[in-house]
Image (tube, rainbow, N blue to C red; front, side):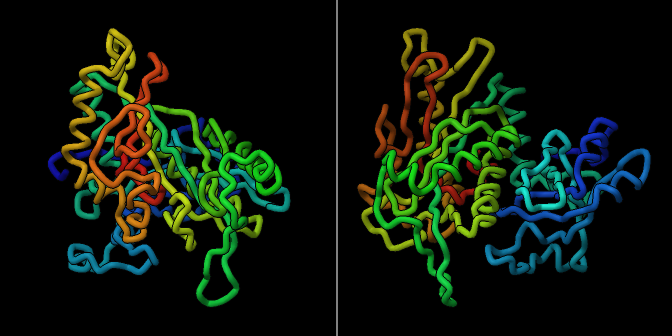
Length: 371
């Protein structure tokens, strides 16, 4: 990772300045190594008054990427040895969006996704940052092999409330498992999910389907496929927006695999649907309409490295609550066409409908690491 250096720059141009004038505040947002969103917020009034060059790199504690799931600072030896120094957040301005707000909110907030510079080499990216590493590998895939990656992460989450006791027990919004139930959908969540779809669309994330799933309080929302790093960015944005959206309505949305005692219900998943595209189109489709040789090689690589991939895609103990027999989640490194018990499920349907679904990741996995 250290052998490949990435240069970074954080300034923006007049077009970005015009968009920032529509907001009162700007959230410099980034993912830590766990996929948790962290940020600093700055007044756009201050940003736009700084200088004509709009150099907006923002200092932050260098150990922030390694903080624990409970936001406890981890004493990384290199950071401690350097005096707990700062590093720099570097924004990627093509990700700038205006965040949705409710009618009673007085201020408009914009958001830009950031990467982290190296604390030890000025002007260099920290290539261990998940988004930086993912961007580099996607570029290598295109430059060296002639392929672009198209896809989307398919998320399930649970909706409910937290108990008033100190235990904070999750109480699902409904106790049954009304899978695909039209009545339950319209009764419990229809208006809220329609509003959620509107807010996602405002951020450029297009919802494909919405339905109730086989778990207490469980909902699935799928989105349309996009290209390259946008796959990870959309997934990262989706998860935070869902949590913020329902929190403003007094509810708790969680992507934890098993947030409640429901031994028979399905656990939340974060399947990765994807395909490779080259100059001739979808590289996963053979001339005869089935899976191509490239698709078979791709599957073989995932199966060969399935143990290592599982460690990256399922980083916490709770992720393994879904890895058990007949749980709608894979338990072995297997492959099959239209097979929901396999780790890799192939869907074959011509140029636009042929892709692979890697069913290993839970929804808590950091999206850039899944890619």
